[in-house]
Image (cartoon, rainbow, N blue to C red; front, side, top):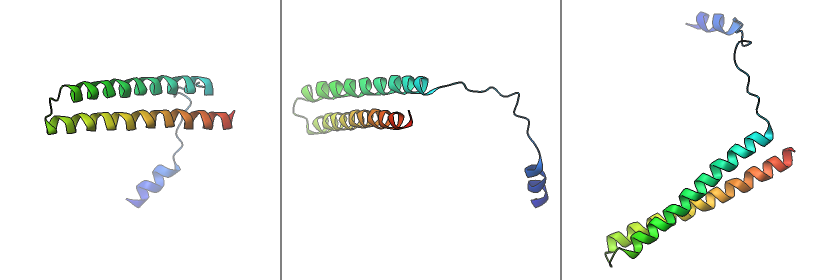
Amino acid sequence: MERIFVYLAQQQIDTSSLPQAQANQGQIQNLLNIVFVITGAIAVMMVVIGGIKYASSQGDPGAISKAKGTIIYALVGLALSIFAVTIVSFVFGRVA
C-alpha cells in the first residue's frame, strides 16, 4: 500500500486543460453582496412571519414560544448577515 502512495505522489498531473477562473475582487464582492442582501431579506421576512405568528397566537403559550423563537433566530441571522458584510468590506478594504 505504501508503494502505491509513493508511486502516486511522484506522478505529474497535467492541469493545463482545466478551466481557469477569472474572477477579480470586484466580482467576488458583488456576488457576496447579493448573497448578503438575500440573506438579510429572508431574515426580515422571518421577523415579519414571527410577528404574524405572535399576533395570531391568541394567548397560547406554545404558539407564543414558537413565535418568539422565530423572531429571535431571525434577528440573530440578520445581525450575522450585517456582521458578515462588515467583515467582507473590512477585508476587501485591507486587500485593495
